[in-house]
Image (cartoon, rainbow, N blue to C red; front, side):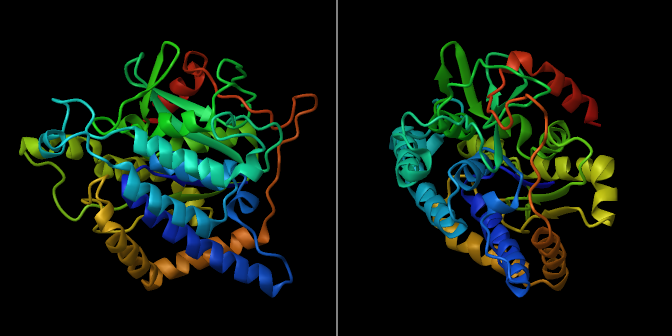
Amino acid sequence: LTIICADGGGVRGLAALVILEQVMEVANEERRKVGLPRQEPWQMFDIIGGTSTGGLIAIMLGRLRMPLDKCKEAYMKLSQRAFTPKNMFSKAVGGPFVGPNFKVEPLEQAIREILEAAGSTLGVGPDEALLYEESGPCKVFVVSHLQNILGHTTIFRSYRNFERPNEKLETLKIWQACRGTSAATTFFEPLTIGEDIYSDGGLLCNNPVQLVHIEGADMFPGRETLLLSLGTGLLSGNLFNPNFANVGKQLADLATETEKEADSFFRRDGAQAARSQRYFRFNVPNIGNIALDEAKELNAIKDAAEKFLNIGEVNLKIRICSEQLAEGEPQLPEFPGSGLNRVTDVSPLDDSGLQERFHSLRP
C-alpha cells in the first residue's frame, strides 16, 4: 500500500511538488534499469490525500491524473492568479475584521481552466465532473472544514469508504471539492452546498497524516504501508506578531501546528514505520514564514526545496523511499459484491466514527 499525504500551505505547496518530483525521478530511474515503464503518481500510489493546497495537488495528481510536470506548471499559474485582493483596503488591513481578503472568482476560474485541460480524462465539462469515480486507479481524498459544526473535519472522497458508506455527497463536483478544501479562512469566501458551509481544512487539520493513516487501514486492512508525507515548510523564526495588519495571514499560517502533528504521528504510529523504512516525512526548512498568498516567492520556494534535496541525508532518504516505490505495484482492495472503488464523499454527520478515532489518537 502506497500513500501520499500533502500538507496545506498556500504557495508553499510548490515545495511539496519539487520533493515529489525528485522521488518520482529516482523511482522511475530504478524502474528503467529493470525494463519497466515510467509511471506518474496516480499509477505509483494507491491513495493521495491532502488538505487545502495539498488537497488541490491530490486532485490534480490522483483524480485528474495530470503528469507531475503539468501539475507543477498548473500549480504555479494558479498560485499567481488566485490571490486577487478585493480592494486596497482589504489588502492593507486584511484579517477577520473585513471578511475575506481575496476575490473568489480568479481562484474558481483557475480551477476551471485546470479541469478544462483535463477534459479528456473527465469525459464531461469542468462544471459537471464529479469527484466520484466508479473505478479509478488511484483513490483521492481532500480535507475540508464544515463550519456548521464547530471543530468538525470533513473528508471528500473519490471512492466509497466501506467503513462509512454514505451517498449524500456523491454528487459533489470536482470544482466544489477544490473550493471546499482551499477556501482558507480570511482569504476566500467559504463554499456553500445546500445548508452546509465548507472552508479550508487546514484550520483544523493542515497535516492530515493521521486521517490518511486511518483511511489506508480502512480501505486496505492488513496491508503494509509506505507513507510519503510532504510538508510545505518549516519556520525560520517566530510565527506570531501583534501587528494587526498581519493577523489574518499569521492565523492562516499553520506551519508550527502542522509539524507538531507530524511529530505526534511519528511518536504514536510512525516511529516503527520509519525504522522499517516505510514512513518518510520531507519538509523544507526556512520557508514556513512565507505567507500563503506570496506568489512572488515561488522562485525562492523552488530554490529552497532544491537545496534541501542536495543535503546528503535527505538525498539518501529520497533514494530509499524511491527504491521501495519502484519495486511495488498498487494493490486494490478486494471486497466481494462491494462495488469495488465506487466513490462516495461521506457526509460529515455520518463520519462520526472517523472523528472519534481521529480525536482519540490525539495526545
